[in-house]
Image 1 (cartoon, rainbow, N blue to C red):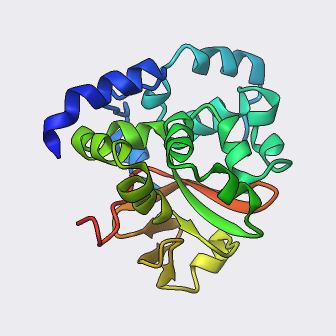
Image 2: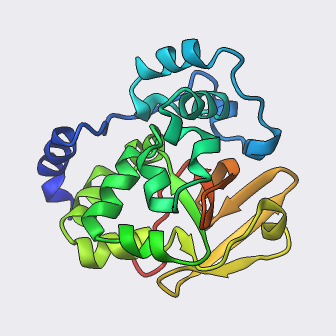
Length: 223
């Protein structure tokens, strides 16, 4: 599996995706769950903030404030408000911090499936999360779009629409692929899959609630 690392990174680079290691100037903010979008203050100068975020590789946009600023400073359809008008795969495609996820969804042929679903909850790994994924695992998934890639992506999707408040009332969910996704809520901190923490929650699209997470989760079947 790990022997195909170089070819994977070259392929990702050709798609203008960044696979470099990601870090935060403040380790605490990088691992602390953010408040919901409704509770997060948007930048006061969106144009200036957008210019600043545009100059930063998306794999380096990792903490809550930077993620919200990047999304708010993007194209109109990519803003948090604009995402509410589109189905989830389309909304994600206009989000500047979800480019790797969008490419993976496209490779797996899941765009129409997600867009046509009636109600979903999506735990969406940011570009920063993908940058921290073992490159060999990413390469193996991209090389097996209908198998491993679909299995990994499906573990991030639940076929019901849930809010952060709803997650506080459950301890596990059944993912799109049928595997059990543990959920743990401690105050404002939401952990899913025993692996990922929610950074920005309760982002609304026309057919889904999206939670930006800091880790690409590997389902139990992948090990």
